[in-house]
Length: 171
Image (cartoon, rainbow, N blue to C red; front, side):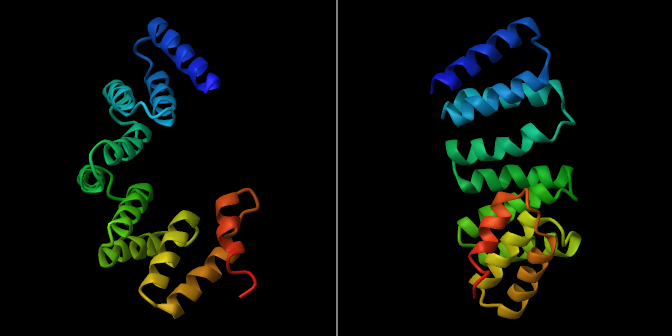
């Protein structure tokens, strides 16, 4: 907690010195989010977006803030607007698929995960989501193919992918 307090102080000082630096607001927002200061994080991300309207990062994380402040359905609405502006963004499609899965809208989640799978079979986070949804829908042949893709693409630096794959290595 002490580190976060120091980080927050440092970002506040940096913002006072350079109030038009979107990157400072972005990192400040992330630190606020981690510290569970959600309203303040939302304000920081909004400022980063205002300063750099084409910067995608703060917009994507804003969905997480909206979900925590309001609901998954509000976050989905926000992400659908973002998807209209960035129709090929795998990260937006991934987040939408995850939210639809979380809200038990399996068919819509499957549509997003399948689209990600068709667009990029090397996007491991998308493959993991698609595999989970295929298992949920009991589409075992597809799930098996997706799992094979994950084993082929695995990157020793991606601990989340390796952790996920470790669940299936001895089956």
